[in-house]
Image (cartoon, rainbow, N blue to C red; front, side):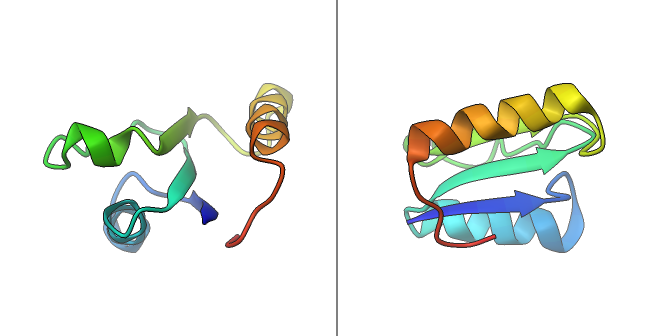
Amino acid sequence: MKAIITGCSKGIGKEILSKLLSDGYEVMSISRTKTNLDDMPDKVTSNWKEIIGDILEEDVHHRIIRVLNEWKNLDIL
């Protein structure tokens, strides 16, 4: 399953990201600052595509679209 999570650098968003990755989801996270998941095993974070930037910026839109085109489908937004 595939999911997009926004605001993942801390708080609830980070916890949701961590849980979905632990459960085997492929996740694209979108946040303005880098998310630190050093405590997660590499095999879990290999399913993670992190996009850093403001969702209002055009280059961020292009990066999101690129991942969605790779995935072909999305289960959770």
